[in-house]
Length: 598
View 1 (cartoon, one colour):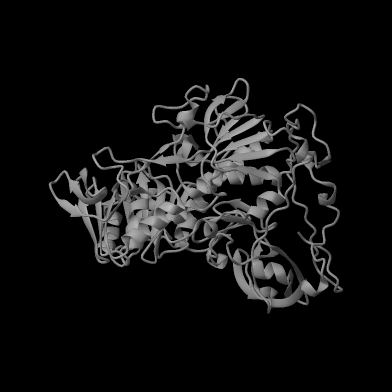
View 2: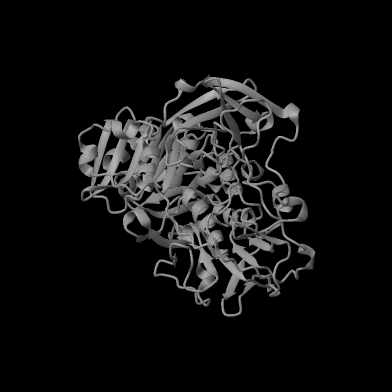
């Protein structure tokens, strides 16, 4: 937010209050049917805060000693559509000029610390070059994911043709900003068996839903329940950083949940949902009534069907303990990974320097063939082979042989027998929706929950998000798809929350994912399902390339290695509603994509 400057003769002063623009009707009933107290109207939108939380001023600089102001450049040093990383002495900021206006905010993406100056500036926001998160340049708010926090926003003024930035030292150091949130009013008055919002699942979809509700001023009870024994954590790191302890990958601290009155019930399994009476039943028999429900239970790893699948040293990577135990057992031993999936390949890449041997068994002839195509898949396969990973392709496991209760050999249908001290299964996952069979919620033949663009199921007041859903993907002409990506789960959780508050918001985001192996990252945006051609620019042998996936005459997805920010640029073009034609990328001239947009 902006504030007034104390120095004289500022050319431009901006004061901004970011609130929803159009009037919306929200359902303001507590579980007991009474209207929630402490509500006020701002621009027609009901907001809830504690007395001490009501916004009473716009000046964020409460401690003058915490303020730094510096001249960072001449007005002519920055053209429209350009960004520059500038140093204020005690920290850096990102300076932006768009449509003749200057903006300043944090320079690092709060997700993994990517330098945003190398990202893509377009349509009033900056997209991260690494993982595609988007930040509003006027407010610093996060508008697309991954990540949970926005960026600190700094004041900009022009004096004597110099650009000055005024910022909080603390904000310069933190490079992140958590949006103002409401709390629950009179939580102690609620029965433990009644909640307004119940969220089944504590992954990114569930967490972002809860946070968005609080950010929008929702002040009734929110309960999240999870079968895990931990608070929400970054599950994507289990195969990328297998030594990580649960506490190291928590998405939010225990204090955060206490501060904002988001209750998390751990080691709690829902076994039945009664949508007619708005009640769920837990495994221990406890019942809880709800007003609005989000189903975000994620997926369950598939297991082998052969003999020996339940032996002690056969794993699916589902929890931090799974990952930690695999690393411990793999040290200087023989590892067999079944499935050249993203999880399987990440595990292989992580263990190859720790284990005596790493073997990958896969039904296809090339890893990632259906997702990235033959040429990209083969290039990746060669990287793994150069790092001592052995592939056994176009075959399956027929048996896991044991000795003294432990698996010792993996027998393939080809007849090959592999020595194995630990086996990791990475052959995909199924949506965790079995508990909904008697609920009335529609489930398709594959177990997914179909939702509309507002993440609503067929049952009023019941929403679903994350790996469990199929939804209309706008840029693929509303094709119903399942997108089990980390980024997509965040966005779906946010959309569900906004529509629980009757804001009528439809999902319109571009799928974005990434994987990292041997210090190299593959970035991917779009939805390449059904691609019929791959146009590759760059040097695929040197792993410096961009691959465009086309269907008929249209680019529907893009992947790259060492070619940033091309994937973020393509994602931004797709998000704007523009089509990229096959002929536009066949010529080899993609300079129109690699430049920074305005």
